[in-house]
Length: 484
Image (cartoon, rainbow, N blue to C red; front, side, top):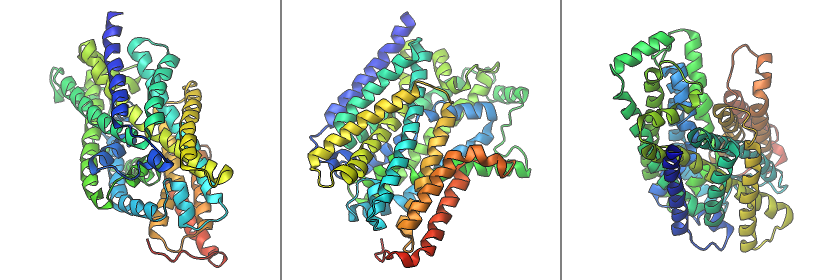
């Protein structure tokens, strides 16, 4: 058990650091605005790195390196799609959403949509709130499954015990600290995980006897292509388009990411945040791809579970004590996404459901209490679903990512850039996008033999629905004349 103790000590220290940051950054909250968006007080550094840390879950350390390790460098188009998608998010959504949500006095996407489209029925708010809770809960469950796997793989600790430990730590600092604490812990975790994921592939590469030649030989033996474009066939280009769009299009509709835009202290600082964030993302994705690339030769005989390539590589390269600190980067990736998602769910429970359905004139302190209760309930429900661990991390994350991207992405863009979109189109877009994303994998075979990612039909059908239904109902509702 010496090795287990050496590995466990860094994890315990890491959890203590997170709790310390939570206590240090904690300030007394008197309203839901404090808890949900930190009263819009973040500087550009915290905004940038917390937004990107919220994006990069354990997928960065596990699923993406595994994709490169198994499928070769053509899988790197996933990273290209993510980089392009986040760049477009910074360029076209961040500043306008920050200004618009302040203009409409909104702290959640659902509230913003309701006020922006002048929906007095409350249907749009409740619908978007339910969709957000469903897909975010799936997303949180995927992250918890990953963390349970870390504890199980590292120490032989029971999967369920590992889940519980991680869930309790996240719950404590999110429950008491709210947006500000989550943002500052995400900043720390973004810097920490970046350092860790850069170190590992460099160390592994220098252990290869013939360096790059070893990777080439191993890839040839395994028949793994190291070309970004394996061949010039139509199928190859189609696969690249699918990989790029299935991830890149999703950024516009991720509540846990775009909420960070809403918390910056000055919309004019968004450009600085963009540069900081994009440099961080490109570095992190390049390092993660390098892990999978080097692993082709490093694990020439194969791995029983490719999604644990980073974990196994670290364990074989470093002393257990050092390995424990490095693998905390994996925890950082998971926790920085999960805490933001749970916080969004708590805000949805208070601002979009409780306040609208039960207590329209609830006091600020009452809404704050409901937000915290929502954080607790969503954490508990996500933990319950995570116990089944019945799907791969890649599958679970892609399902939730597609659902949120299809349901909210087109609507975010139309709310910021279209003067003709109305509440009927908005409702139609959310329904169509969410439903297509949810069932596409089951019905894809009835339309084509191609395995089209749900994000592509879901996103564009949602966009089309908003436009078409808004046009057909133009005479049935007052148009929004105010320009954003």
